[in-house]
Length: 308
Image (tube, rainbow, N blue to C red; front, side):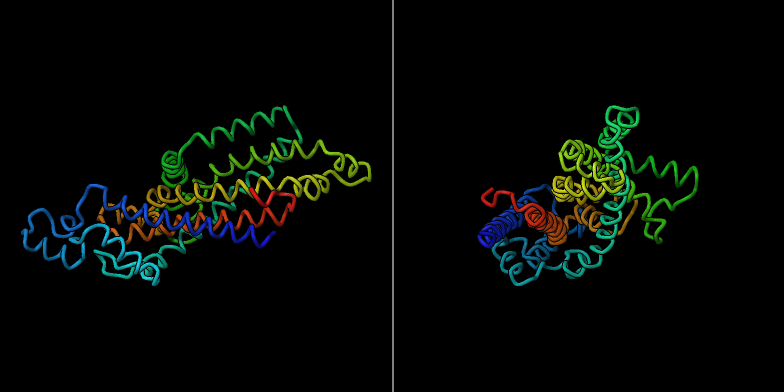
């Protein structure tokens, strides 16, 4: 039964990924803008434009271009950048590591803030601390990245001078973008942890743990939080897509040399192969993480229906 579930989920993931691959290709080619005009300028001669268009294969029917791209993709070839002439796979490798570092740092910030905040809110339900925590969570969700980022730059870079404004100059350059991404995720996680903890704290085994003389810390961490972790893992997997999407804006604000900045630069240049590679990488990562999340949830709680 477990094998059937895994095979079903894998086939579903493959279908989703193929749909994304096709949709991204056609959407990019439908969007207004001519990469040839961007590369040669408006004053270029018509013959030069047509020659370059033919050399790049952009004069072929779009269906034929799609079939050629699929053939290359299934041979692990994402194409070549129209501008830099570098392999798209090489560009993605160069920019993927900074994005991965930023995403992991943001996740660490979110967990560091949300776990104690959610537990304290649940333990002290309806207290001033609980109301303040939930108000802070709502505020964190409400402020978008393109507002939070400049606010942090103004406060901690320009006024206080604690951190660099932008770029990648080491650990200090990572703090502000990680806070920008992590605070929004922390707001969602803290509310989820509070809700899960409130439900678990009403269970009989929690009262039994207190009756056996266990300390409050042991009960909360090793009994309550452990049993409340399933919905938290699920929401983490779902929010990774939001984290990656938010990284596009955040990396642009802080000039962080990741996939987000690469995709914005490629859109401005109408560099089709690079745009497709970036979007596909983000989409594939999101689908893969959700697939892994499903398997983790299944291992944590075998009572999950396998036919869902």
